[in-house]
Length: 69
Image (cartoon, rainbow, N blue to C red; front, side, top):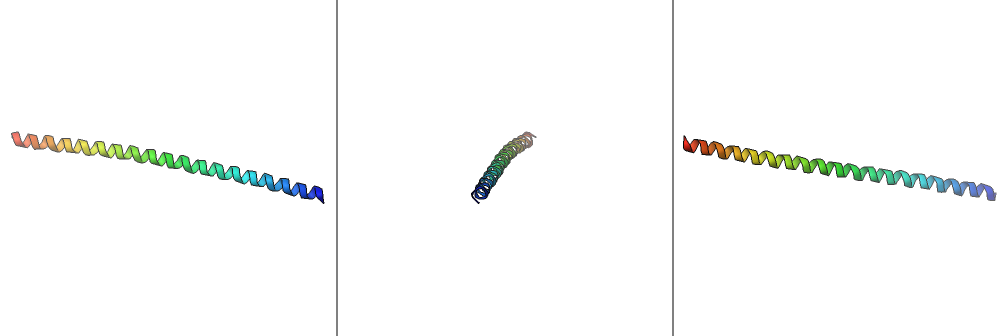
């Protein structure tokens, strides 16, 4: 009986360790995905800002060109 109890306890500990390892891996994957999404979002905002700056510069040049025409 004692041997069966030991086997049960060891099995439960192994299962708990496996679950903990899986949960940790899942959390790490989620964190990496969030970091990737944040990086992509930051890059997109930078590109949008650059595009707006170019549009503003183009409008200024068009206005200047019309002023001298």
